[in-house]
Image (cartoon, rainbow, N blue to C red):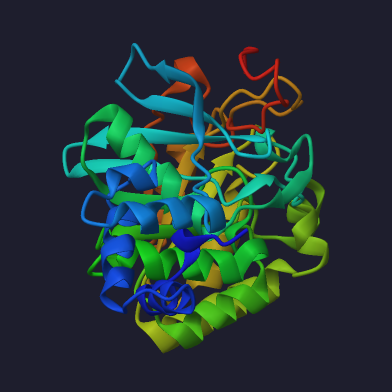
Length: 345
């Protein structure tokens, strides 16, 4: 199947030229796709014969809205999308005073195995295509009737485990003839895939890199994040320093506060030591409930924050959004296939 929506404009043009069409049709088709067209019949400035040809050779794979939940607490919207192969993913729209942010998934499931996260429980099924990531932004915007100004790749999956497709998605969503969302309005979260971070540094995309740290010492981190056995936290800190030196971009470190596990004073002191010389922002996340997890929220979030601040580290406590619909950090999960997508989270 030809996936036109995962193509850059020049690639769409070449595809249409191979079908015997003039080059200018490529820009027209690209524009329609990036306006969120759901069928070729909507592309009214294309000849009917071309629309029929595109239906035959390049069918559009449009996600189906399986369920939508709206938080009664803060208006956060969680979407369950059924993909063309029957798999389901979740994305979340959050409303802030500075604009609307959509949190999207990059994979169906996740293989990283973080012990406190619901997204990884059923494992990874497959990577999402660039078009499937773009669809989450476009169709969340269309359904909510709210303009999306910011994107976070913090939903289901590890973006750097699907790096080529993620990079293509970034090109597409940033394209001036597409949604034209600036890189500085995009955040990408990783649990610490070092080759991927190095590649992002080389590309110098000016997005915001968000590193899921969750523990500054190898022993603790390996217990709750299996990725640490492949990419040790000390090496992670070194690569983060390299990233800052190459890009000049401050890194945001995510830190889920887990009672008795990673909330000790010595761990705050170690974070400060490891971040010395690199402007970084520590985002403290009160642990959200995941039924399958034995971990409990820390009672020391405030004390931990103050200790970090005494070391000169910028630390804030993330406001939890969508908790009543399981849309908060670590709560998104891959739903079962057909017939089960309506089951409660």
